[in-house]
Length: 242
Ligand code: NAP
Image (cartoon, rainbow, N blue to C red):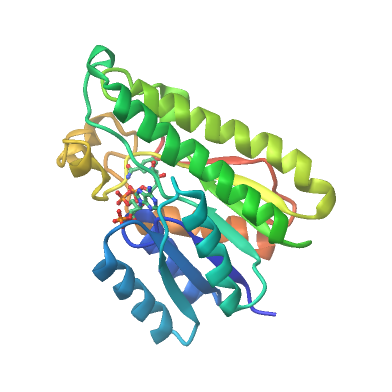
């Protein structure tokens, strides 16, 4: 049976790279996204070009009904075998005292509540051999001082979600893991007001450069694969040494 995987936030950045990588590895892929239809359709076209099945669903993960629609649509691809909880946002980079309550709520809504609700749908549908990968951040352990401490705190909650859910689902044969990227070259940085961050931060990254989305996609694909059959509850840093 071919693997069928949902990737939230699959239209751009790490999610798009992951969707393409999973297709290359033989997965049929359903991507969710929020507003960038053109980018989502391009990812679907690339997946189909590999001979895999693909669909894109506008599914804002802050809306439980849209999450339900994404999981329902994915059944067209076959029985679900995997979820990549990836859709995430930051807010404007800056000191903690400047954080606006609306931005804080949005970061919690997308990066935590959305992840929990998607994981809940997946846990209900996956069977033995299924797997969930949560995309966290090294911010969870570094704290992101002066940038976005609240985002770091929410990513730490994602790590804890991984640890607890891995233990709860282990008896059912469903694995739950986490990839914690370092600074990766995506549009996320421009959206938080620091488009040059992957370059300006290079000096404090032990490997001396920002990562590329494909370098995260490979780790996610491994955690979903049979090669990771004995790996659950892991938080895998892919961060150039950060
Ligand atoms: P990105 O390039 O900004 O892409 C974000 C993706 O999430 C897009 O597909 C976007 O879709 C989607 N999205 C945003 N809000 C959404 C919502 N409410 N509902 C559904 N989809 C939504 O970001 P990225 O850098 O690839 O980040 C992916 C994940 O990696 C996030 O969880 C992020 O926190 C984490 N991460 C990133 C870095 C980094 O340096 N880039 C480092 C550590 C962790 P639309 O375009 O349609 O809005």
